[in-house]
Image 1: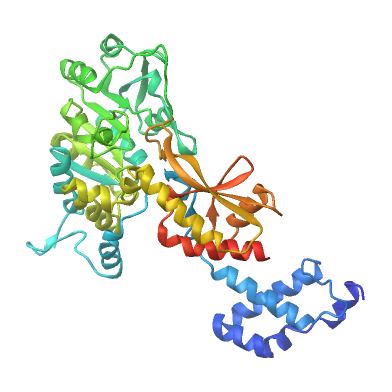
Image 2 (image 1 turned 135 degrees about the vertical axis):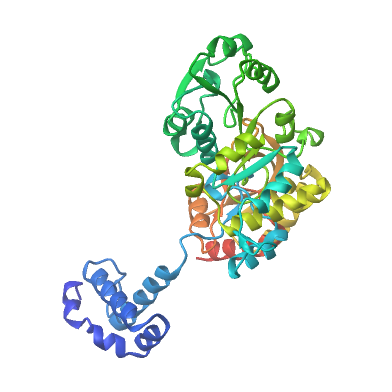
Length: 464
């Protein structure tokens, strides 16, 4: 029987709605939504987009099954949990930092309750949303004042628009970076209604370049951390302290965009030297901006710390309202920052720091545990523990590879690419990396409590 001959046998929309399955779907999703989905299912059948390979297909069953699938898809959130097997700790495409479980209560309470986000309980009058974060940020960084907006690009834009509107901002050519999504420092400066003045060269910028670059129309010096690439070889970077001295002499504010700013010195844990936010301020930066959702390990936010006179001017800027953060960001950022009062608590309770500082012995044990639970599966694949490497990601420590461990999956009846695609399309997507014709799951970025879910997903894939 041809596909076209089946058209005459297509049940009516009303008949499908009155069927047992149709009534159930109308009850679950509403009559209107069920009706629309049935019409869509019929249209797909007419277009030959449904599997109709059977000689005597049960059209009612076929159409109602497709209807239910369409309704489920409609109500499945686009933003979903994924399992990160890439080894990249701060993966921009996968949501950057994972929040600590210890901020869960603060997140839920702030989201499901009325809060004093802009209410002064003592005075019984309107308050400031900045008061909830300013004190703790000042205590952790040594800054005079602080302000939080919705991301670091916004923070830089607000700082420049406040301190250098319609005037020149000096930036080294070696620091005119492009960050994710093709956002570039020159364009942010332009959007801030400032004029870029480039100094030095791509690979070398000396203190005298800054001195000679200052003119009558110069309003600020901007130093940008080259967070997503490295320049090596014949190079010279002027330090924050060197630029700060020149800025003081010229009576100009020094703005330091740190990108992925850190509150803890990670050199003691084997990472290369990077300034902390406190160290940048101590070296003479007047204003420092950094992200809340990178190495800091909190929610998306742009944090501005520095001298009170500059921060107060930013608070009065009209752009600040457009860039302000909501109550849930304030609550989760405050709860994350509180963990930094005790460094040991921070490195054990903040997932980003915990993953970064995980040692090879612990990773080896973790990988062996995953391989063991996977090996129980009677599937056509071989699971082995292999040496791997992780990355910090999020524009922090560019080019640094951290030794890690992974479980390599070598499927016998699928290619590595086919397996990767099927894992990516699972109900809970697993994002893996392919190396040497195998799919690797780097255990640095996988929680042990996700192992049973990985087993379930792979079992489904190999049994299909």
